[in-house]
Image (tube, rainbow, N blue to C red; front, side, top):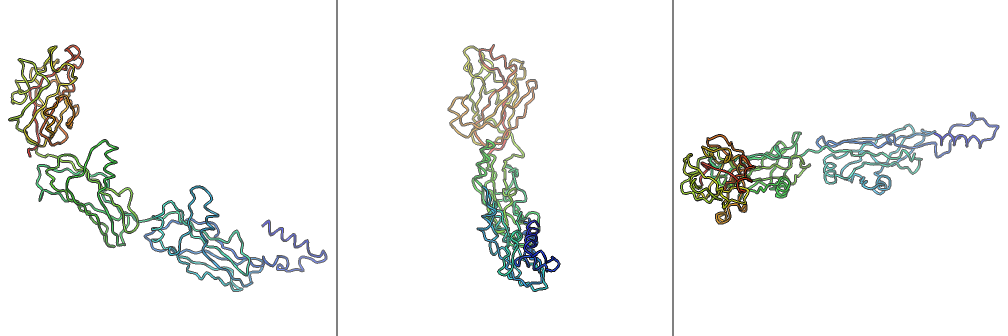
Length: 475
């Protein structure tokens, strides 16, 4: 407005003083180049969120003819803005990444050459955005900010430079995603004493199109994700492994009328699984749209269990002890089924246990088997000085443990850690354990009552045991 006002003053000053303004027409007052002016009405950048499932989107903007003489015929051209022009105007700071939508992702539905008749003062220009193609483009370049921009030019009429562009920014694209119906960790208990056809387990894992009704033909690829397993073990201080023998469907298809498809997992020799295992399966890619990041991975945590544990016969078990008190019984007494007999620690100054913080007892059960829990029974006439309050149990399938010191933790897997036991009950006490496979058992006394009595007992921990039992399943 300021510029127009200045032009009027300048024009008036150039006129002879004897001529009044009323004697001149408006077209004589304004310079000829301002008689007719072309401009785009919607000259502020608009923001658009596309729904890739709703089909192509047709939009429009208005080219206007204005000025002091709108009866003049005029011609203008609408053309896409170049990437170099966008770089100059938009990509001026670090991290800026504005890109023009490439050809193929839109169509200009109006003839780009606009011929205005004398009676016309506005024309609508229509263009169509191809939603699915733009969704694919955005999915492949998530850091980019895409623009649809047109510029107005004319060879015979003035164009208002400040209103010569139409810009539409693609703020977001709502894209269908594909993922597991039950993503995350799924605990799967395998019954080692159960019945399985062919000793194999078959699991169907549903993969689905999320949130919307599927109207497309989609394929997806999946596989066991060993990187996920390694990272999980590192973060959670676990040592899970995949089963020795398994198969996983690696490719699935969802037809346009199908909401779900299934990845088939087959685990062989299920009754021989001897530890907790993990099988993470991740969708790596889909033919259309994107993988749902939150539902990309389905993790099977395979936990062997024994539903009906049996007492393991102790006939023929061998034993190694840290020490025993002469005349009061050695470790054979904890295997005889008689609660009246017991093992008792050696307390003399010359005791082999002296200098060791824990009593350790080792048993050879004769062959490999599964252990689910253990039994402990205290000395029936125990007093406070020999009462045990906490135990560790270890299992091993490594024959090396029979020849190493009972105090050596190497080659053992701890399956019971610091289990509290009653120091007043004479009943057989049940001690649950992490299911494990092995031949050898090791018992470590890690708590006594009172613990302080060690110092007054030649540095030897106290303890007496009537029975040690084991439960599980023979192989």
